[in-house]
Amino acid sequence: MSAIKELREYFAEIMRLGYINALLNWDQEVNMMQYKSLEGRSKQVSLITKLTHQRITSDKVGKMIKEAEKLDLNEIDKAMLRDITREYNLATKLPEKLVTEIAETSILASKDWRDARAKSDFSIFQNILEKTVELQIEKAEKLGTHPDIYSTLIDLYEPGATYHWIANIFNPLRPKLIDFVKKLNSSSDKPDGSIFDKHYDEDKQFEVSHKIIEKLQFDFGSGRQDKVTHPFTTSLAALDVRITTRTTEPFPDCITSTIHEYGHAIYEMGIRKELHDTVLCTGTSMGIHESQSRMWENVVGRSKEFWMYWYPTFQEYFPENLKNVPMEEFHRAINIVQPSFIRVNADEVTYGLHIILRFEIEKALMEGKIQVSELPEIWNSKFEELLGIIPPNDAQGVLQDVHFSGGLFGYFPTYFLGNLYGAQIYAKALKDMPNLPEDYKNGEFSNLLSYLKEKIHQHGAIYRANDLIKRVTGEDLNSEYFLNYIEKKFTPIYRL
Ligand code: ZN
Image (cartoon, rainbow, N blue to C red; front, side, top):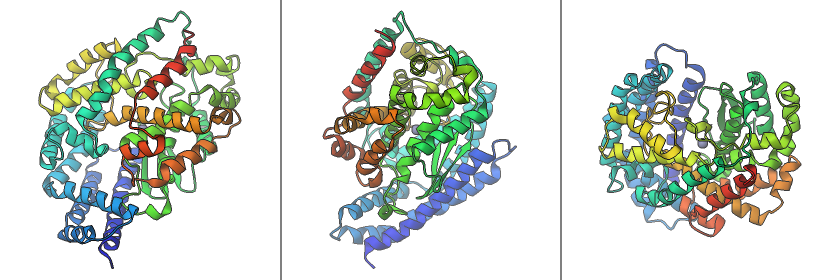
C-alpha cells in the first residue's frame, strides 16, 4: 500500500476518535446540564483526547509522512498530506501531560463559568480562567508556529492568518463602524422593535425554526436539531451533523440563530463523499465556516425578500403579536442596529465591534499586558469606547461567552472574518445570479445553496481560506464588500 493510502486509513481512525469526542461533548451540552458533577465525563473526554494524541504522535506517522512526501500526489492527496503534517507537527510539539491537562481544565472551567455567569460573579471563574490562560500560553510557546503567541493561537482556527494580517483588516473598520452606527442612530425615523417585547410561545418558535431549515434543505436523514442554552453545530460523522436551538431568548433569536447553525451544518453536509473520513472532511477555516452561517442568517435570513415569503407563516403562528404588523415594519424591526451587551444577539453592524473588543483584549492577555483579575474592568471600559454603553453586570459583560472557559483564545476574530468573507462571496453570487432575491420571494432557496455547494462546500478543507476566496471571487479578502453591503442595506431601513 502506498504511504499516502496508509496515512489516509490511519487518519480515518483518528477522525472517528474525534467524532466520538464530539458525541461526548454534544451529549454533555444537550443532556447533562443539570448534573451536579461532570467529573465522569471529563475523564472520558480526556481519555479519548489522550488516545487521539498518542495515535497522531506515533513515530509511524512521521515515517509515513516522509515516504508520502516522495510521491507524485494529486491535488486532494497533496492537501491531505499538508493537513496531516500540520496535525502531526502541532501534536508532536505538545507533551501528553499538557494536552490532557488542557482537556480536563476546560471541562472544569465550563462548570465554573456557568456558575459564575448564573450568579454574575466573576470571582467564581477567575482561578480556573487564570489556569486556562497559563495553559494556552504554554501551548502556544511549545507550538511556536509564529513569533507571537496570539498569532500561533489564531492559526489554529484560521490557518495562515496572523495577528497583524487581521489587525490590518480590523483597524480601518473600527472607526468606520463606530461612525456608521452613530449615523444610523441619528435617524429621525428609526425602526420600532416593540413587537419583540411580546411573548412568543417557545414550542411554536422551535416548530417554525424547524420548518424553515427543512425548507432550506437541512437533511434530517443525516442530522438532528435539539434544544440547548447556547446554540452550536457539531459533526458526529460525515453524515451526522447536529444543530442546536435555544428558545429562551427574546424573539426572533431562536429563528436567526437556528438559520445560523443551519449555515454551518449545510457546509459540513455538502462535503463530497471522496473526502469523507479524511482530514479534509471539514470546513477549511472557522472564518469560512462563519461566512456560510452568517450569510444564511443575515444576508438571506434578514432580507426583505426572505420575509416576503415567510412572514405570512409567522403571522399564522403568532397572530396575537403579528396580525396587525405590516411585513415592512417587521423587516425593519429585525434589522435594528443598536449597541447592545450580548455579542450573539448583536446586529450585523455592531457585531464586528464586539469582535474587535475581544480581539484587542485577547492580544493583551496573551502578551501578559493585562491580568485575568483586571478583565471585568477592562472589558467594561473598552465596551464603552467601542459601543458607547457599559454592561450593568459581568454576566452581560465579560462572562457572556463560552470561549474563554474552553481556552479558545484566537477563535473570536474568525467570527468577524466570517462576515467579511460572507459579504464578498455573496456579492459574487449575486453578480453571477442576479435573480437570487426574486427566488427568495417564491420560497426558492436551492439556487444559492447549489452555488455554495459547488463553489465552497464540496471542497471541504482542500483549499485554504485565502485560496478559496480567490478561486470563488477572483480576489483576496476585501472588507469593502461588507461596508458596501451594510451601507446599501441599512440606509433605507433607517430612512436616511
Ligand atoms: Zn457560527
